Amino acid sequence: MSKLRLGVLASGSGSNLQAIIDSIKCGNLPCEIAVVISDKPDVYALKRAELHGIKTETVQSKTFQNREAFDTELVRILKDHNVELVVLAGFMRVVTRILINAFPMRIMNIHPALLPSFPGLHVQKKAIEYGAKFSGCTVHFVDEGIDTGPIIIQAVVPVNDNDTEETLSARILKEEHRIYPCAIKLFAKGRLEVRDRRVIVK
Ligand code: GRF
Image (cartoon, rainbow, N blue to C red; front, side):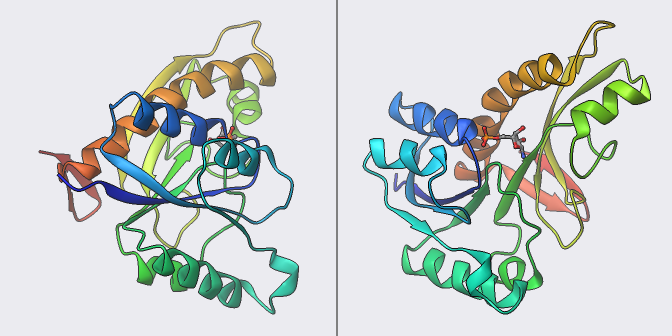
């Protein structure tokens, strides 16, 4: 079976990227990472890719007139590498219609909350401050909204009374590393079907 070609977009430490690399290395994920793209130079995600011999590109937003022009460049690089699934892994930018139309229902994101609760940023802190008893993480397809696309997998994490943003984030991150490779594997095996906004696992 041919391997699904992934393009991973990251802006930071790349721990989710690492979880995907590890999953591929131990034979759990029938994929190969064709390219890792970052919008920031010198981030550890790029270093992780280099350490594993994966091609990297840096595309900085300041060199583009607008978000559409930036996304046009992303599409060019992703298509050049024959990417079939785009994986946002800690990618801290809102993507535009340009990227979404180039890869319809072929862009995944991981979000550190149980969507549709707490979309956006700093969501672990928001879950604690709100008094939620459970939070978690969500892998979803990307549409034009912010964290609004069809949900693929979620994992639930309890919020403890003594949790800080750091302790809750760490517990959620552990689950992110578990469910992101699972979601990609389901996609790679052709087991995800999107009906309206529901994702059916076949
Ligand atoms: C993760 O919580 C991810 O959900 C969020 O950014 C955090 C850092 O991810 N979007 P990573 O270590 O760079 O993969």
